[in-house]
Image (cartoon, rainbow, N blue to C red):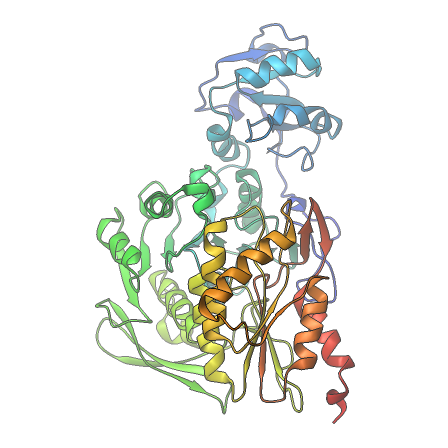
Length: 539
């Protein structure tokens, strides 16, 4: 199923999620194309042909030339920059037995004389889920499925969902931003929600490993780009909707509409919706599947309500009361820091209960959940003479505000933040993000996140303008122009014992992307190395 599978801890590197390889029996091409409107079939010589006459048997499907095996269909999708058919030769070298593409792709395939049959359809991306259903035998129907969407909190909620299922499904699988884990193996994630073929293989592997249940973290892009079409989740959850991805969607209404697709009969059987924000309330009102509501950070009316949120420093947890629909209170000591995670914890528990897990079991399982990588993760839980150092993924204005306020509650001294923001992403949030950092933190270290193709200085200039709008004197503001590692080192060594240093934006990411190159980097081991070399560690 996996080649050289790695581990989920920080001592090793996980292999790619594309290495998931469930056992699949080859099927005839006509069967693989059932339910798909085919505009034309062409033989290896580019001449029109009969499907039955020269169609190969197929055993897999892919949209990536880097993720291909012998006997697979390569689906060449038109992209924003170039057509996927330009990568067909590499897929064929890896064993692809057929190309499925649109008319433009078919014409280019002929020009390239690829030497394999070509199937032409009008919308290649839209038919990928149908191919997956046919080739992998509808794996979502053989396991219990949960999904979570929202701007902030998806990853945390997905991990807590998996934990909450433990009494019924102790080996539930997980597919999300940080990792994909199936049975005894884990894989490095490529994106929040993988492409449809990877999701299908993940679900097929979940079934073959007898995991019983799967939790999938769903981005708006995944819903818009057909990655989970054909899957009807048993429970779908919504955390919140905040300012993000407007470079792709243009406005919040379009972004919301993409998220709302999950709460239709085509994608889910029932929903669990947090109504703390206006978008959640709208979703609860307009969803076309049965919905259970949760309020956690507000006093909005809901089926399940959170009350009495209290940080308990004696046990290092935040404790709250979860009031069930019958009005009975239930104490929850959540395993992750910060009031912001009350919302995620409550949604995870209620989602598990919606699947038939007892409330007592769900709470107990969540309270004993392991640390979630890169989510309010304490690098040094017992700091002694050093500052407490926390790594968190907060990268939107709202998430950063919540995270810094939660950090303030835990801190006797100063709140010190190390942060940047992504290049080639929604630039409209940059100055607001920085202004929030200036208002909520005491000491700011401005550095780089993933500049991608942008000039890092240009990105930092956005942030510095935002900081100046909230803190004109720029007191305790430091720009580090060398590298993120230097910013982490300087922030920790400059901080005092009573301070908290929070490193935001990257969370558990294992890379820093600069000019198309993914450099291996992770905030947690970098911070741990600085702490180990700090003379105060030996006091």
